[in-house]
Image (cartoon, rainbow, N blue to C red; front, top):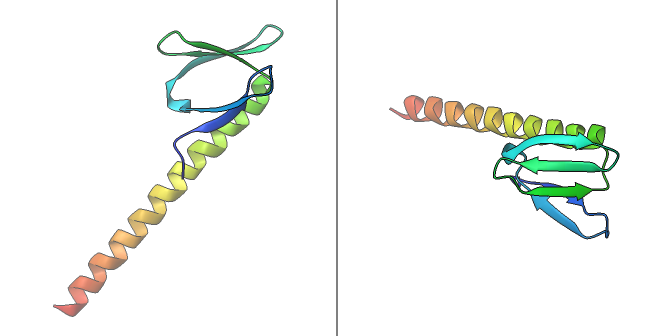
Length: 83
């Protein structure tokens, strides 16, 4: 799992950014992403598209964490059974 989402500049070049570092997204009329460090990016995706990408990214992080927790718990149970 990559800690990034992929977005597209107006010139059609694609790049990845860390959604945890997004401060805000504006749609006036072009969609502009403002990062916590003040960097701005104008992208082709709509605000709704970006929110959906960020939501999917965060859901995948939670799913991975839950999967790792279940794996760690079952490994701990297996270790106890061996003793």
